[in-house]
Length: 140
Image (cartoon, rainbow, N blue to C red; front, side, top):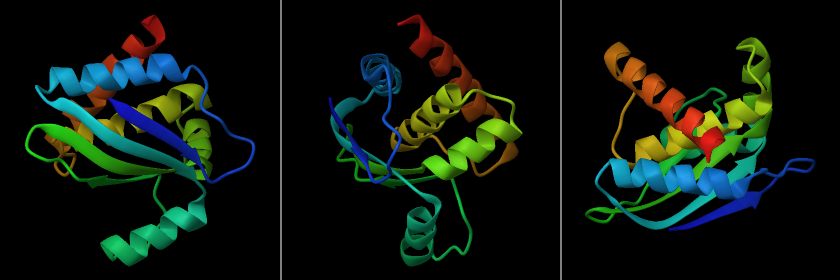
């Protein structure tokens, strides 16, 4: 799979990229899909806010926006992550930043694999899967 990480922010670089990419590959394989090309862009609150307004018509800050370009069973897409929002959320949730950034990345790839989080049941299922893949990412 071609997963490229892009940085639109200073003072942040994803660590242990290999373990993260292995877990992403597992998420895709477990969904019965094939890897394609995905870009993950780490940015700030303002950029993600602009994307949310322009492309989704939503007027609020968020931690992640995912654009799914899947072709049949091949996973392709773009994921935009606000490092600012992830930092704030990690404090609110009493999680390490490292865990929270991984969780958000895996959340985006779960969306690219067709999982949704609109209902409370879907949110619960995605949270369980995020937790499972998070644990797996530390084991690899």
